[in-house]
Image (cartoon, rainbow, N blue to C red; front, side, top):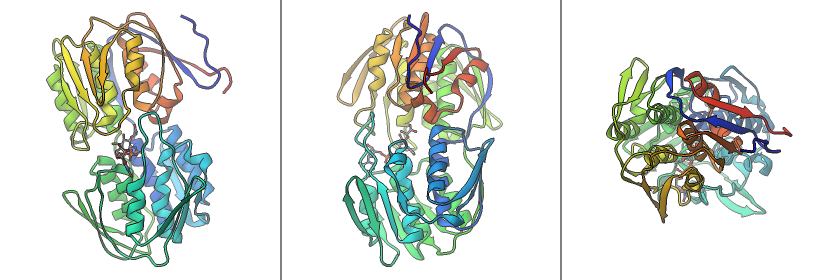
Length: 427
Ligand code: EPZ
């Protein structure tokens, strides 16, 4: 196995064969931190956000609001933001291409300045990821929206309340609309919204800032305000990091205890783990997970919350790859989220893709190989595969992992894994 590292990104070297045992603390949620950081643009007062994970995406989000004129600092999970100096309403392509969640700057900038100019996010390896629903919302709210030269230009003469129904459930589309409407006087109604825990955490923050937001199923009734306050908020735990570590414990036939977990955020994941043959114990503020016996094959369909999360699909695929029998995974959210399958095949997995369905034939064991990360959750699945593969697995392009997992190799090694980070030759 060549273990030369790449020029552009760190590489992981993973030794297979250890059972994970012990306790780790789960970090704060990336996908809650991002919309909450952008919502600070709505106020001129100081905001304090706690338990924010130290991730590339968070760094980019803080860099963006600094670029827009905010002051702030990030230290040991605490982000302090003074947004009084926000002047610019333009989010440059240089930032958007690094982090597509920058589209979340549209709502707050439009609410604060009556205009926003944001570079169009490209697609990514898991799908085209259009933002038509975001733009349809702004048009329905009375804004002029035009797309020119790779930028979206949004302007509004007079902000007014609106009734809008999303044609499909979109997490950041819902967040963009909720942040915008929190800055608009009057009673607005949003229908068919996403209810992911990260959306609910954002709603908690918007309420602290002074917006009134009532939920009735997938309908939100928002009474916004032109004078929103600063806030202090501790971000919810990252349910996807927790789910990933739970799968690692079951996969390696170990016993893993996780602190800082809200089990209600993982209902569908815990249900599937139990059905697969895991024992999941609820503890005070955490969970303990271990395998109970032989793993059982599963049928998984990814859905919007509270259904099985698409962000856990790749991780479960690894477990099913070594589960005796035939399993099936249907990816209903993204049209191209099976990139990890091609890499898992290099390790001996028997997975057949037909459209949005993957059919998995369990094999005895996976073999270490040289594999490439393609997106955030796919890279996590390759690390899981390396933990159980015979021999050594070399995983390239680890920057994908660093976007969404805080020090994953440290957490896994604390549980007994052997994951070595080989720094890029040219950082
Ligand atoms: C959020 O992405 C998350 N990102 C994703 O997590 C997550 O996978 C996804 O929600 C689904 O849960 C953040 O929160 C920063 P969507 P988002 O809009 O909001 C289509 C990770 O791993 N759609 O809910 O971009 C879209 O193409 C990341 O942390 C439209 O057609 O996802 C997709 O098929 C990956 N038009 C589906 O809806 C739109 O205007 C769901 O997308 C918007 C979305």
